[in-house]
Amino acid sequence: MSATIELAQRLLKIDSVTPDDKGCQTLIADFLAPLGFNIEPMPFADVSNLWARKGTTKPLLVFAGHTDVVPTGPAEKWRFPPFSAQIEGDMLYARGAADMKSSIACFMIATERFVKDYPNHCGSIGYLITSDEEGPAVNGTVKVVETLEARHEKIDFCLVGEPSSDAKLGDSIKNGRRGSLNGELIIKGVQGHIAYPQLADNPIHKALPALKALTDIEWDQGNDYFPPTSLQISNIQSGTGATNVIPGECKVMFNFRFSTEHTAESLKQGVVNCLAAFDLEYEINWNLSGLPFVTGAEGELIQATGDAVEKIRGYRPTLSTGGGTSDGRFIAPTGAQVIEFGPLNDTIHKVNECVSVSDLNDLTEMYYHVMVNLLTKG
Image (cartoon, rainbow, N blue to C red; front, side, top):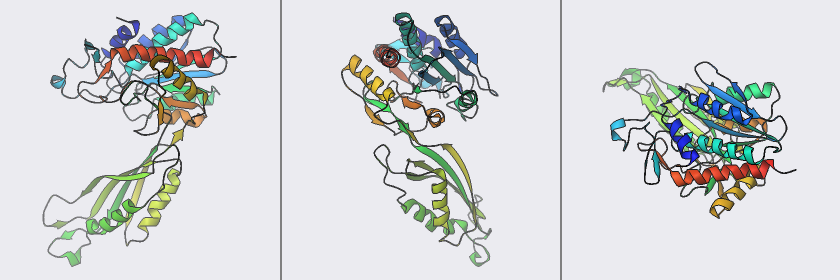
């Protein structure tokens, strides 16, 4: 069994359900310290964060990831106990196998080999690891980045080990993500008896044409990197549960996944402008989860990663900005080139989450060659 798989199993056997790291970061720190890394725990509230760096010069290449995992769901529905990290055939089963402890193991073994092969490499290597990615994500990567920015410690390249591959390892690199803006729209009415509608004001009836207008808007047509901006309604709540009561308010929850064609403020203003055409009393509460970001195809990090994939597997990855958000959204605003590159994503958050053992060994090789491509020049 390879060193990558043994290390992955050690991490995966720790039941680090968000935000409890349960000692994963201690394991990582103890591995990196003998390689010459300066180890700096950065806890915030109940969240464990680790910043580790080897070297002081530029460029700084950072491997970013998270040790927290989502809950397992019914353990009895799993092929094996979800934290047993058992292997069947070529597949390693565990919660976090794909998302994303195995990537961290690949980072670590690749780094160990690189430091041994290139003891005088140029630039620096960093690790930014959090236990608050699957949860609220308020005391994790964003706080570490704020700390680094405050002391002018700039990241040049950041490879986030999220599962980016679709049908085969390395077929896709996430070179950006859409922004995410959540809205809670509360439309006010007047509660009353359903038999006397003239004495009430039904907010559901008032909401429907306004919501139809919002969903009919073409917000933009996207661009070379992003699909068109999308508004999706996720929840509508109203009523008392009784069949003879007109409700007093209607609450609508919706989300924008938006491209770089928009800002959060332009989307908010667009909603307000649309609602102005209707006779509504309402309030809106907004929550911005992340801004859109993109790393251009011509960037050194994408080229270095594409070359690494081609060297190991013989094909080049495509670029994608689809999917949900990741902690890359906190790192990109610093000016760093940011990509997500990791194993297949088809089982993430599912019962029987698993990852290919042979893929992990190849992924380790790919991460190694990314470092060779970026840190042995000049």
